[in-house]
Amino acid sequence: EVLPEIREYERAVTTAVDAALTPVLRGYLRALADRASEFGVPEPEIMQSNGGLIDLPGAADHASRTVLSGPAAGVIGAAALGARFPMAITFDMGGTSCDVALVQAGRPGRTGGTVINGQPLHLPMLDVVTVSAGGGSIGWADSGAALRVGPRSAGARPGPAAYGHGGDRATVTDANVVLGRLPVDVTLGGDLHLDPVAAATVIDALADELGLSRDDCALGIIRVANQEMARAVRRVSVERGIDPRGAAVIAFGGAGPLHACEVAEEVGARRVIVPATAGMLAARGLLAAGQRRDAVHTVLLPTSAADDLRAETARLIAQVTAALPDARVTVSADCRYVGQRHSLTVEWPGGGHDTTLLEAAFHHAHHDRFGGSEPDHPVEMVSLRVAAERGATPLPIPERTTAAPVVGPAVCRMDGATVWVADGWRAHTTSDGGFDLEREA
Image (cartoon, rainbow, N blue to C red):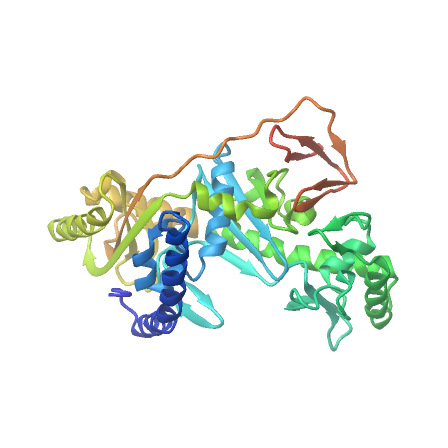
């Protein structure tokens, strides 16, 4: 019921996670529905890790579907804004981590599972890579006196030293304050004033330990964090056989716009989009998302068993469309060459009818990913995947204004975020109050 796929350990862990979380989430959702009813608000829908909404009873039955719903909502919002680009990289940097995903033709990548805290969670979800680099990530010196950043974080309390809540370790935020990339003459969140003296004090302490100047230490923290985030970008692009240099980076989260230009440079990208609602793009993603249902089943059949595969496809299509009538249905499959252990997930062209189309799609995907294919070798389908989607709402696409661009290095302030326009970049304002940045030739 939770995971009808092969691999017993992964099934056991996923089922255990679902069993542990479901009673907790069910109680919360019941209280949420009751409060909504009191105020005459319709019963809410819940975001899933697959980037689609599900009704409240469905979420309450299987809490594991929602484990990565927060990052998924951000990806959906960024994908909607980046739909005009052939390829986009979503870059969501917050206080403790950075979430990165690849979007092609407006469609985010998908995967059948991930690893959380060392344990496999195998469920349909968006293909998001997370690294421990955020505004609160702590800089430290290792045993060889080399500068490291993360995975430890200062969290929200005490947070970075610049917050004035007693933080005593140098963080990425403190480094940005010392370098002048975060303005200290504004009030944040209504009552928070950044403390540049406290930020300088913790940076100085780490600089002394490393034998660096204050500015060099702060810049080093930024560069190490940027390298970690660039590695995440390469994992969703280069390691998938995709060149990120032609991608637009959609930067959001509270810290994303501060680091996007330099991370884009690390991977060769030349365009960065910062939406006006960068600090709350995940919320816009919730508004843009449609409903989605996924069904998966292990078949372990050669693609030559066309009749059996078509019958199983029809069964799964009936399952998802019963939950979402009039939805758009897509069929994909985990395939491999007979004798291989690993598989690739490819979309089945034509909606799951012609296995020769599936074989051709698999050969093409294998060549793109691994640099070669074996068109004469028999292909085996491991698992069949069917998804139904409906009701997605497109977001308005902002256009550049005719105002003169801001030439870097410069700081641009926004509600909920700050944009660092790096040296060699130009920032054009957009019609919604965001920024469209380009690297100069």
